[in-house]
Length: 145
Image 1 (tube, one colour):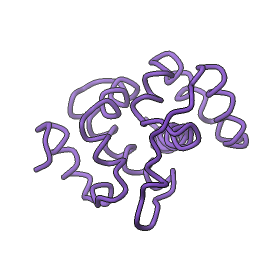
Image 2: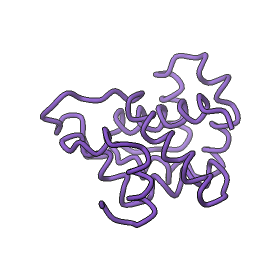
Image 3: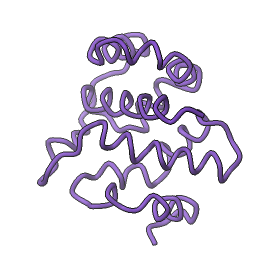
Image 4: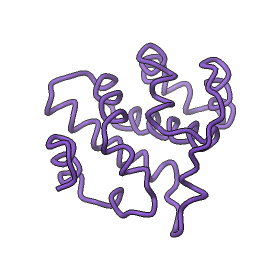
């Protein structure tokens, strides 16, 4: 498994979510497993292109509507970049895939649809700064420890 590919996919998900003002889980679910697998498989091509164009293409193709979730505007502190958040998700997804013995895209879908995703995406909390092993334990226990 190539870490930078997963990092790119997670960054793109966050970028699309910010642009459309949707929750990250909603973006993952609108894209669906087939699109996510395609993005994962072709990340070496997509990352060479302008992220705005790639983002717009997926918004249009997946018919992702504009939402009202704006964790960037709601943030009272320093706003993490989409790449900062991608690092958090990448590490957690890799750990979940290994722990559960499942594929990366399946782990990605599970992580973004978990209770922990909403907590990570609350930029007014410090959860996205937490140790990766702590985040994995929270995910596995299905609660903040």
